[in-house]
Every structure is written in C-alpha cells, then in structure tokens.
Length: 270
Image 1: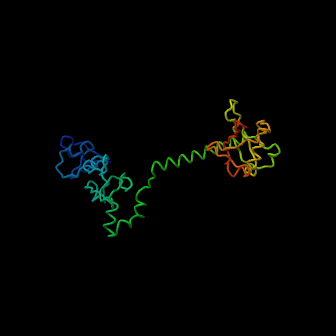
Image 2: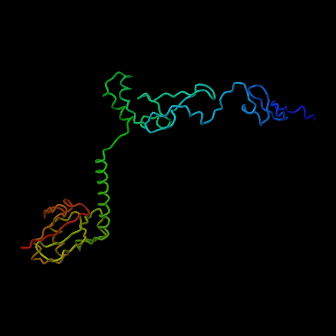
Image 3: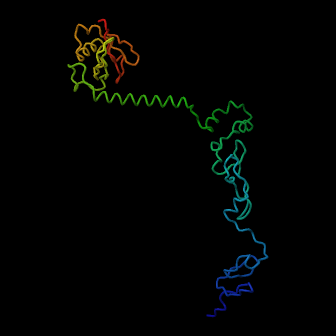
C-alpha cells in the first residue's frame, strides 16, 4: 500500500507533517491535530465564536427578583451561537424571571389584579375565586397557636385518661370490673380535704359506672376515705378546675368528663 496516498500534509508551512486524519478548517485548508486551531495557523476566514456554557450566560440579563443573580429564562432565536432573547414574562405582572422564579407564587406576583382586570374589563370583586387559587392561603399566627394548643390539650387529656384507667380502683366494691366495659365507666382523681384543718390531704383514683348519681358516689367516697357517718352528711363534691359543687341527685357523668379531677370537701364546722 502506498502510504503517500493516505492522509495529507499539514497546510502550515512550518509543520508540513503528514496527518492520516486531517481536519479541514473554515478556510478550506487541512491541518494536523496540533494546528487546526485558528490561532495556530493565523486563520483569516470568518469563524463563528465557540459556544461555551459560560458564553451563553455572560451577556444575559438577570432575574428581576431582588437578590437573585440568575440569568433570565430565555429562548433560542436561531442555531448554535445565535443570540438568545428573554422568554415571555409573567402574564400577571409582565416582568421576566429566571427558571426558579417564573411562577407567580415564587416571586410574590403583585400584578395579578390589574393584569386580569385590564384583560376582562370586569370589577376586581369578580376576581376573588381566581385570587384564592393564585395566592397561597395564610393562617394568622394566633389562630395557628390556638389550634396547636387545643391539639396539645386533647392529647394531654387522652394521656391522663389512659393513666387513670391503669391506676384506678372501683369506687363501688359491688361493681364487677369484668362485667362493666371501660366505655361505661367514668374515671376520676379525688382529693379529700377538710376546711380549716391541718390534717394532710388524702387522694385516690377511682372509677364509677356512668349511671351512678353524685349522692351515691359521695357515700362510697366517704367509705373509701374512712370518714365517719356522723361527718359524711356534710360532704360535698366539687370539680377541681372551677370548684363547682355537683348536685347530689344527678348522674356523675352528666357533670364530669372522663379523667377529671374532683375535690371532696367537708365544712370545718360540721
């Protein structure tokens, strides 16, 4: 095989090396791999600038959002190396943004009302459904805190109820715990104190059937706290949170929620 028939000599006179895979420049001359660069052979032909990622963004305008330095979202106007033009801006405010802030909620769009009003020529009151979809909903901090406090209170109440169910004993010795479901019981923490007395308080956690009346519960609690019958008649039962005295003739569950705290009181003059 004649090697002279393969490849061509580099067109640069100072090189003239035979290259078996030559590259043709825009000036229509062939060069070796070392001199194909226009600067290497002083090319006089007009060449399009080399497109690099840096050159694509160097001259582009920046995002309108304050504090963002990203280039605008753009679109091609031609082939590789041709200029880019800013893409269509926000339809509401008419401003142009980068790819990260192109959506209305991303740049807190302020032109939605005026923009839509000009297009439809309608009163701004008719835009309420549109605005409710375009703008994110906002819940005041006070409302969120109130909702959070109610949730925590409900969780605490549920936890206290579970603890009481585990620690409680039957208030009525005649009640059979295996025959009375939990949902038919009311669990209470009872504190016994005597007004004007230096005696230490006594406490206990009990469960009663929801149908039991307050008067019967008083008699059973007097027995549980070893209160003599002569003094039991002066006993009153109160809700601890508001010191409300419970009426003797009504069911206990009508006035007391599960896992409540009660106070058993006796007058010091009795």
